[in-house]
Length: 585
Ligand code: ARG
Image 1: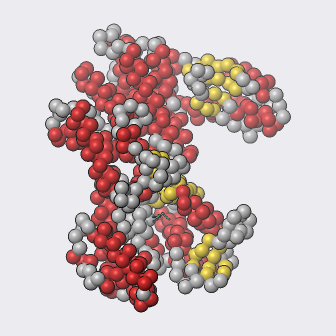
Image 2: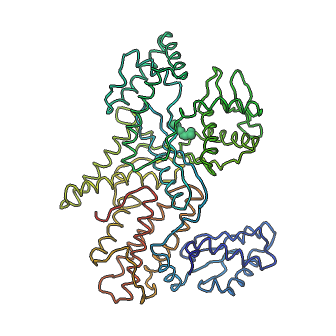
């Protein structure tokens, strides 16, 4: 079996397509649409006959039968059981002998690095604003972005991770004014409390400016000075950025998130004017009550709702910066694709940005990268409302992580009182942080979800502790046998999978590549979570019903292979979700 059988779904798609082209009713527009089937009916299903028949006004059952006849005569498809079902589906079932060969071939060798080879993908995630603490609202971009970038990399893309900090904007005028007003020495601030202090100063500045016009004017002046590169203000601004990033880095370290570039909004400050000039010259942007805007006349809503790229006071904004950023990513990174991970409230912004880029690049004859907005819903409290501390403030990320780890520690100490304190702490860190990440990733990202410690730290159900425990259990088995789970066995003699649990576990393993494909198509990591949870449950049924120790060699070997393969997929899967795993728990 050669390596293109790894991804059976694509392989079957290619085979059925090729076969269909020998039947005169089918033409090149036919897509077999192979799907993973409900296990009661088979392993895979050819779905596309229905669509094709509808479009071409043919009888689907008849076409299905024709395709089935050819499939049955095909040498390549001989290891599969196939039958016609419903209005024209073809169900495909993998024979035990095929499953055995597939498992032997691909155990420990699930390599998808050819899938996205040659593609350069910039991913813009986390991207918090400086001068503020990260709070619970900053969790999702970081966690979802990290997981997606890992998957893209795993599939062979050249991934460029860019943290697009919000570090330039009108808020710095107010902040610098307040800093000067209170005579704060920003260079001597305690890094532990600097961000809290900036948040307080900013609020103070807003109040002052509201109450007294002199302060408002002072803030405006500070902003202009900063924008002109005035020495003192620039140094203050830099100190704010440094203090902010130091705090962010601490969180990134704990969450195991790394970037290739940190090119914040300020990086583009000298590149925004030319964007406005170009768009105006190309007649893509127009003046509207003193501002510069872009309308998309053939769009339902954006025909009247403009995309603002220069305010009436002459200042550029979020939109202008993002336009300059796309151009930079195209020119310097040669991005084929750019992915933005932000919350759903920015959907309009990105739609308008993408439409504008399209027109701009086409007009300039620059290749337009594929632009994708990976948006997500809100994290809610257990009561279903916006998550807040008891005093109504938003919860700081740092405290949230600390709480997760300390709650996990309490559970570990209770379950494993005999472990050393060092080990308990290590497990608690992995479980606590893994639980927070998994609770987020296991939800369809476009939904809101309720944050619940009890649920995410539970050892039952679709949670990180459940999966981490499943992994540790398989490691424990290998330790008991005193063999390495990574060892290549001499697999002959290996019996065929025969018990119902062996067969359904093997079938589940076969679906791993299809699941990765599904995640890539939609950039939704929850598909992988659901799959890993189901795989771990299948494993658990298998392990409870099938003896491993004390079996004859050929049976021992097939069961160990299933353990090894499951372990490998679970560990790879969690790694792709950005979650560390443990050998002992
Ligand atoms: N700083 C923005 C925020 O906190 C997110 C930036 C996302 N990236 C971008 N290129 N616009 O909402």
